[in-house]
Length: 413
Image (cartoon, rainbow, N blue to C red; front, side, top):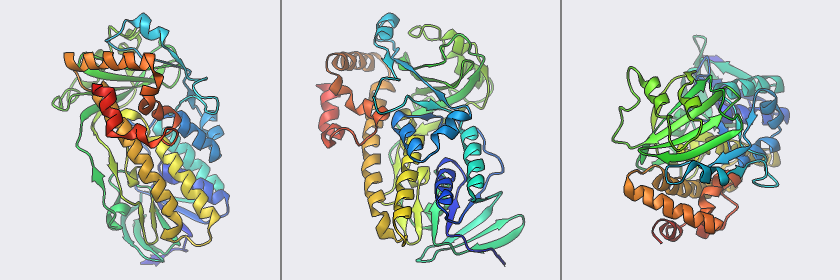
């Protein structure tokens, strides 16, 4: 077994969260090594819409200009098209995302593989070491943790001051550190695909709504490209599987409630058509001796709310600040992060589960419920607080918004 020079910080996972943290710590003068299993970042059909509150986190981290300068695309309008209202009524309720909040920029869209590559390159420029194609990672937790791994056919051993788990939903670090993961039941399924040649669809317009048996989401990334998603009942697990899946997916965007949706349906697939279950996962505490978890590794929000990237960037910002403000990186100094993240994910879990009932349940009863709720939102915008959370952040509204009493009042009151 060969022995490499010890790094101060070993980050397992070279995706968005791991690379962003590596950049900020390396810029501050810390010795950082990232180990990553993949040789190339691929399209995983998620994580390409950054909410306004997440965009603010990229600014605090000094990463915003990097993302915008390399293709990051701001959206400027949100129209809530949906079957329960006429298209002209929905258009009249358009939200100017540039003026949604005076302190926040509009949502930002960028392909996930592109974002990962950008952050990898910036981490290298900042002085971090990035190793790709790493396998056989073995972790021993402790005051001075130890990590063994295989790279380029050789075994290596590191004893960093801290190990950061940023290796995604099926985290090796989380499992080997003995940190438990809770999981909600899957409420519905979701399929996404990148689509090119959508000229004619307004490049700054996002829309989210429901028609018949699908909940649809449209996030343009340029004048000719958009990321499209569809949520549908979990009993239809083979709806977008097998031969012809991409065509069936595009045909689902021939929506009577959405003017111009043919521009989307007539587009060309530019990536895989992947399906997955929608549910939340979370950890009671993302900590172990010598280990801290960030990003999906520490638990993820139901993708129906689109909060994954924003969660990751806030994780990075809080952990970075704690590491730079403290000389000793003991579990105790990360307790504020664990506490804040626990409540943040609880609130987002509530908001996502509420949105799933409103938008990803189908049939006459669900349609009547959406129409009733829409009228409530129109006459009293405060009743949309849980949904607005997805844009302005989970910490803005008071705790009583994220309670069963609030949900029951909105759904059944």
